[in-house]
Amino acid sequence: MATRFVTIDRDTALLLPPDLREWVPANHLVHFVLDAVEQLDVSGVPVNERGSGSEQYPPRLLLALLIYSYATGTFGSRRIEQSTYDSVAVRVLTADTHPDHDTICAFRRAHQPLLSACFVHVLQLAQQLKLAQFGQVAVAVDGSKVAANASKHAAVSYERAGEMIAQLELEVKHLMAKAEQADATPLQEGLSIPAEIVRRQERQAALAQARAVIEARAHARYTAELAAHEHKVAARQERAARGEKPRGKPPAPPSPGPQPKDQYNFTDPESRIMKAGNGAHFEQSYNAQAAVDVESRLIVGERVSAAPNDKQELVPTVAVIALEAGAVTTVLADSGFFSETAVRHIEQTAAGAPTGTTVYAAMEKTSHHRSVADLEQKPEPEAPPPEVSVGERMRHRLKTGSGKSLYKLRQQTVEPIFGIIKSVMGFRQFLLRGLEKVSLEWTLVCLAYNVRRLHTLKKQRARA
Image (tube, rainbow, N blue to C red; front, side, top):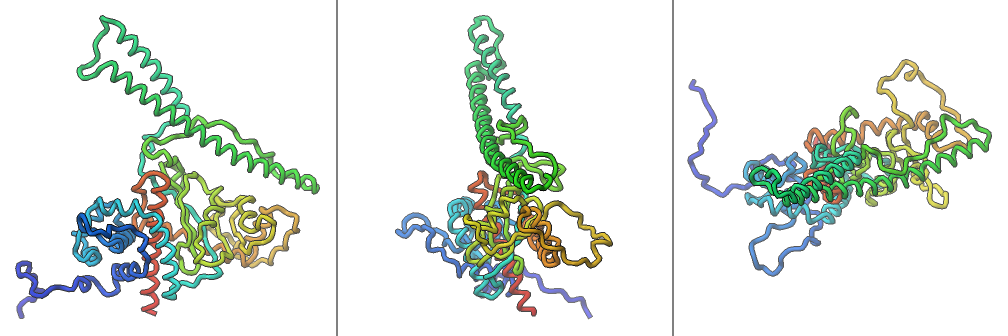
């Protein structure tokens, strides 16, 4: 019998109009994105209702295109435009139309309120589809450094900026003196003394502005650190008044001025130099925060910070959890988030009444390896007296059986989310610049992740 191959014919034209939706499987993500976006409210998006000018793309199509593209690892507007030609699924989504990159980029930049509203609507859709149950939720909070659209080599330190200003002042004086000399040696062809003076003066102004911004940041940092220092001193005095021996050395007061190594980036001034990876190197980054529902693995709160660590981030990150997620009963966080002030703020009202939320935050880093002693069954620890510090109560809380079980959920809940966003979706660097625009892009990333997660949950339920 002769060898048989599938017939490949690229020359014969299609005889009947094809149904684009049949080009991808029925359970494909693109179908779910289209169905989900149909449920979202886009009535607030301004459109040209007069009918004049060029035809405009429907807001619902552009929103679906952005969500699907971010969910599948295509982030740049030019790459998204190219995918409308290259990707079969995107052709299905756009009905074989091709929005240009300017239209895509402008829509993304201009609709922060729409993306924030859609983030909430997707959580409501999860409940309507019975893919998530909100009400009394436990959330895991974490942050991850995401590279800014700026090079760390475009930054200058406070100390170096001062040195460069002094050097430029000397060069300007030298050029001005050279201009007054009739027999001065001319500059290279194409260079003029006035232009070189102006260029140096502009550079001086930019460096002076950088130093001013660094000084303002240092003042804000000093104010926050001074308040924390005063609280630590007061707590130490309270323990001494109760007859308890204070632990460790007295807290050192913060330094009021900028540090010599404090930096300013000229490409994206609102980004910061932060420890990246395992802390062995530094990158120009933002601190992307997420609060994840333990049961559904959906992101219920997101924000971006320029803080290089998480010490002050617990309260604002818990505060942005969507009301649609319900009442937060448990907050799980690692040791980087813990501070007595933050825990007290979340667990108590201003009047001192309990809020109904309990924080489980590690007090120090622990090894993932479990020793034989860790495997042995131990009795429940005795409850500490009511007058002990927040830190002592937290240590006791994490030693109880229920506390250990709850805290284990943090590692398997929020850390994989960042792994999926960075490794599966491929989002490792912001494309936009400035904290406001970066926050918009992070909202879009979290929205795309949630839609992708709902699609996975729906397929799992169908198989079950």
